[in-house]
Amino acid sequence: MAGSVLAGGAGVIVTWVVARTLPTAEAGAFFAATAAFVLAGGLAKLGTQTGLVYWPARLRATGQDHLLGACLRAGIPPVAVFSVALALGMWLAAPGIAHLTAGESPEVVAVHTTGLRVLAVFVPLQALTDVLLTVTRGYRIMRPTVLLDRVLRSGLQVLAVCAAGVAASWAAASLPVFAFAWAAPYLPVVVLAGFAARRAYTAGVDRERNATRAERRTLRRDFWVFTGPRAVAAVAQLALQRVDVLLVAALGGLAPAAIYAVAGRFVVLVQFANQGLSQSVQPRLAEALSTGDTAGAKRLYQIATGWLVLVTWPVCLLVAAFAPYYLRIFGPEYAAGAPVVLVLAAAMLVATGCGMVDMVLAMAGRTSANLGNVLIALTVTVGLDVLLIPRFGALGAAFGLAGAMVVNNLLPLAQVHRGTGMHPFGPGTRTAALLAAGCFGPVLFFPAALVAAVPAYAMGAWLLRGRLMLGAFRRKS
Image (cartoon, rainbow, N blue to C red; front, side, top):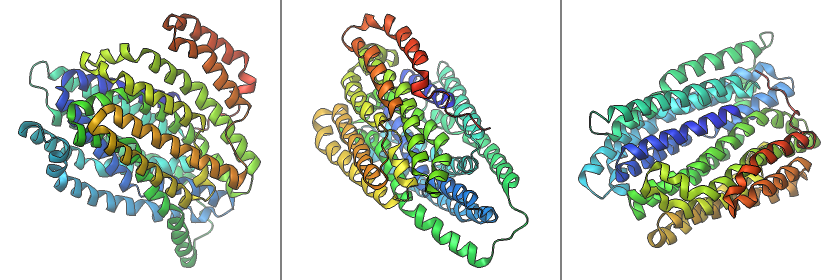
C-alpha cells in the first residue's frame, strides 16, 4: 500500500511538472499520448496479469508444481511477440492519432506525432515489466512489484521529468523530451523484473517431476480459456480509465483534455491504492477459491475492502472539498476543473466501497461475466462522452466516467453475491465508511473542520483497529 501511495504521489508530481512547463495544448497532447501508450501496453499483456497469478496459485494449491514452468511459457512469449507488433502499429498510426486528437495546429500535431513514436518504442518494455512482476506475485512475492514498479520506476520518472522541466528553463520545452523522460525508466526496470521473476521461479520449481506433453498441452488450453476473456476485459478496463482523455482531446480540444487529465489525477491515486491492495490479496484469494474455501475468500474480500475504504474515502472527500484551491497549483487555468473533481469523487466513493469486486469475480472463474460487465461500462462511458463532451467539455467526460464506474462495480457486485454469497460490506468496511464520513464529511461544508478531522480520524482508526482488522495479514517478501 505504501508503494502504491508513493507511485500515486509520483504521478501527481509528474502531472504538475508537465502542466506547469508545457503550454496547455501540448500538455493535453502529452496526456493523450501517455493514455494511448498505456492502452497499447494493456492490450499487449493479453490478460495475463490475472492468468499468471491464478494458475501458479492453483497449481501449487493442487500439488502440480511441476507444471509451473509450462504455465509461464504459455503466458510470457505471446506477450513479448504481440507487444512488438503493437509497438510497430502505434509507430505507424502516430500521425493519424495525432491528427485525431490534436488537429488544432500543424506544430502541435508534429510534436504529438513524435511523442507518440517515442512512447511506441517502450510499449514492449512496459508490457514485459508488468507481466514479469505478475509472475513474482503469482508466487506470493510482493517486494519486486513494490520496489521495482512503485518505487524505482516512479522515482526515476519523477527525476527524469523534473530534469526535463529544469532543462526547459534554458531551452524551449518539448513534448517528445518529456515523453522520453517519462518512458525511459522502463528499460532498467524490465531487466530487474526479469531477474526477480527468474529467481521466484527457480526457488519454487519441482525438479523431481517433469511435465508430460499432454499435461503441457492441456495447461496451455486451460490457461488461455481462462485468460482469453480476461484479455479483452483488461483492455476494456484500461479503456475505461484512459479513453476519456483521448475523447476529450478529439471532441473538445487539447486544452480541455489537459484540464480533465489534471482534475482526474486523484482518481489514478485512488486506483493505485486499489491496485496495491488487490495485488496483495490476489494470490491468497486465488488459492482460497481454487480449493473451495468460500468463507476464507469472503473474509479476505471484506478485510481488504475495509482497508481500501479507510485509505481512500478521506482522499476523495478532501479533494472534493478543496478542489478549487489545489487545482490552482497546476496553473490558474486548471481551476476550471473543480466540477470534474466533484463528480469523480462521488463516483469513487461508490467504486471503492465495492472493493476489488471485478478481481473477485474473475478469480471465481466468471471471466466471461467480467468481460460483459466491462464492455457494458465501456459502452456507457463512450456513449455519454460522445453525447456530453461537445456540449460540456471536460465535465461531460466526468459524467461519462462516473456512470461507467458505477455500472462496472454494481453489476459484478450483484453477480458475486448471487454466485458465491460474498459481499464486501463486513464490519471493517462499515466501520471505515462511517469513520471517514463522520470525520471528513463536515469538511465539505466547513473547510476549517479539517483541523479536527485529521486527528479525530487517526484516533478513531487506532481505537477501532481490531474491528478494522489492521493486523490481519503479514507481508511476505
